[in-house]
Amino acid sequence: MAAIHERLGLVPVINASGTMTTLGASRGVAEAREAVAAILGEFVDMAALQKRASRAIAEATGAEAGFVTSSSASAMTLGVAAAMTGSDPAAIARLPDAAGMKNEVVVQAGHLIDFGAPVGQMIALAGARVVSAGTTAGVSRAALDTAFGAGTAAAMFVISHHVEAPGQADLATFIAVAHGHGVPVIVDMASEYDLTGAIAMGADLVIWSAHKFLGGPTAGIVAGRRELVRAAYLQSRGIGRAMKVGKEGVAGAIGALEAWGRRDHAAEKAREDAIVAGWMAALAGVPGLVLRVLPDWTGNPIDRVEVTVGAGAGLHAWELADRLAARDPSIRVRDDLLAAGVIHLDPCNLDAREAALVSDAIGEEVAGALSRRDGLRENLAAHEAARLAAALRFPD
Ligand SMILES: *Cc1c(COP(=O)(O)O)cnc(C)c1O
Image (cartoon, rainbow, N blue to C red; front, side):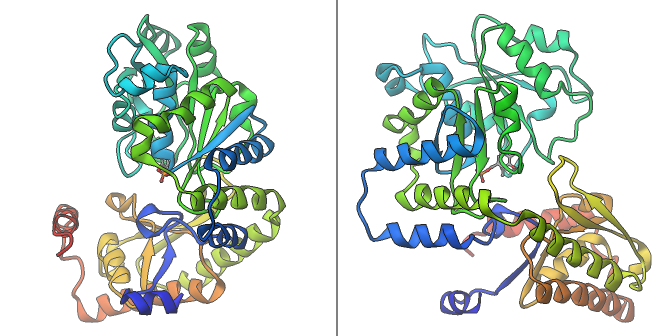
């Protein structure tokens, strides 16, 4: 990792956070890196390359067809656009002006999450309008049913650890209701390992990120019914041009997807489990920390260490996260539940040496805060305000 960081003058990062866009997502697998490097210096007929991608995606997912986008976020926009325009070139050229088209997209209230940007905004980008079904406290079948109307173009279902709302309809119910109204279902499961389940259940368009668990370059993978895939692909003549994927993204995504089928998933899980066990042992004696092994709550085969940072550690969870990030190399922990005083350690992107550096650093930061008594100073609101202020100073 050192050479490119040194050349660009960047602090190396040890990623104990998981596949995060803000950290460069994942380590590319060899097959993806090779494909990216091999095609970057060549010309290629992009339509032929996307047809080849369609075959690889169909093979991996069981769908009729597929193509590669610049990201899952853009795939959400393009999927909605496809449901609005079909393959009509004139309609494609008119977007985001949706005059004369069905333009409502039904989404359960609890699925309107922020994955780094809001789901609803990706839908609105196509010229569509979100119709929220039910509430974040629950969605009855009747509430879902009444959200559909004459103007409904599509329904979107989100599978993500960001979805925390209880009582949302499950995918089978969602598909049954949408199809009952003759409306196609788009499933955003960008970060979920299961490549076949949603297609098998009858979802019309399913979206994954190539750069997350697959270890590909930044790209989105779209699989689904042939006509809807075609209509989404054809948006490249319109709004999709602003979301262009390059040859390296398509070729790299194919490489990562084909490698996925050959990878030794049991060996990778065993490697991750050994890291988690190592953390549990190494952190057991650190004062103020309560440890627990936490299985991924959307069912991905990942166990993480949940670290609840108590006052006995001499610093707040967010202070610990900040101090780890400020080190060189910078250690990044999973921080979406800081408000609950919790950090998570994710083993997916680490080797054993890096994993040991993470637990050593946590022990050092806690010991340092206790001996210097310089923790428990910044409240959560001040921490969040400081983070936002730093982001708004770009590029300094
Ligand atoms: C990561 C993620 C996205 C965004 O994916 P990109 O490919 O980075 O645009 C969208 N939805 C969910 C549920 C995600 O996890």
